[in-house]
Length: 522
Image 1 (cartoon, rainbow, N blue to C red):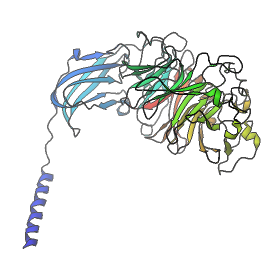
Image 2: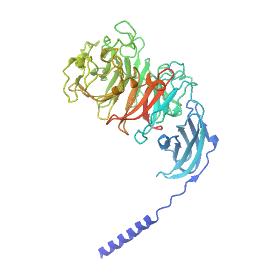
Image 3: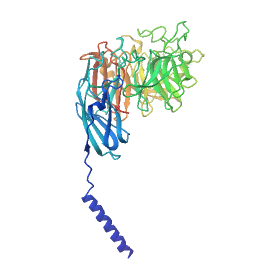
Image 4: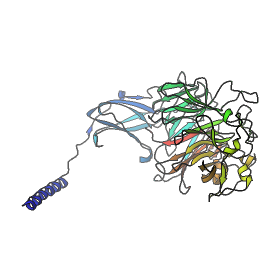
């Protein structure tokens, strides 16, 4: 009897499932609605001429979705779904083209992503600000291979013009899709952001400004959300967000004297409390390192007051340390007591610091591809290279790879202490063993490109997790077919194949300090 009942229930259930399959629910047709032209405010704060705010009421409640249609199809569409349930919406629109009638799709979505209501409108834009790059050209590429996202360029084409630093987003075809123009801003009309602009974890942008010595947080439309003073220090080069939200930055301290009697610059790292403001910690690099080491000073880039030239700081959460790049010294790892853990750089010229510590014991010894220490002292000294190993020279942009290796942009200025050495820059990864105090070169790209991707100063590297690619971005006086400036080269990590390359040329021959690929919206 029980088996008959079970068979009956299964038959009924299957019959119901079959009925549901044969007669699936009919989707509700999306309701068309109109957004009035006066609901669209182009450049609402006056700082982002390729952005707008749309305020609209929808005929049905849901989440808003925006799509700015790209000129080159799906890859260049700028899309975002907002978490703004309801019928009344106010959304920022970025990704517009300059001097163009942009088509924008607006949708209202259900929790499951179905379109409940839809509207299409056009937004007409005007000119870009002055002093932008003269040309941006993208080499032919396979859209299926490039990583998604826009490229945030910390533009240097305004450098020396009196205009503020003017960063922009460009797409894979080199079209500018967003620009931040602070010419009319009371505080930021002379913005000089050095390394440039980055994104906070909350989705807003942030940067330091040399002229006001403050850190600023701004939203997608350029509105200043918050700012922080530096407790008497002067911003220079790089600021990052720690996991706890605080800011770490490279800085100068006015009146800080060197042993040579000269007031030094760019040789401090400080931490600023994000919530309360004020100084959390200070690293005076004159105490931990050797300011008398001038072995790289034959470069015309080095001045008597700039022995270190801090240009990058990274935080290592595995052991609560910082990693600082000094263009004129190397890369150093420090703890929170300003004690050296290791030094990544050629061995020549290191002696003792102000505390009397012998810095030679912190120098990493190079090993070959098999992990065997390279016995040739000319290699560790820095006057010779091998097929397995080259040191970093005047490097920038220290980052971590997922496997824990450290990557830098190796500019290559005065490589092997030789001003006439071959000119090339590299993205190079090193595996560091802090117990054995060894360093192994594990990956490099750029040497094979020679002078065509050589950048004496600035520049950066980025790991793109979505594609396992490296963004290799030489930014200064890089020769292009249309002039000089920078290149943004996307390279497969696995086989070093270039999947895209964009050339940027500017009147002042300065492309950018950093360029980073990311989603348009947070």
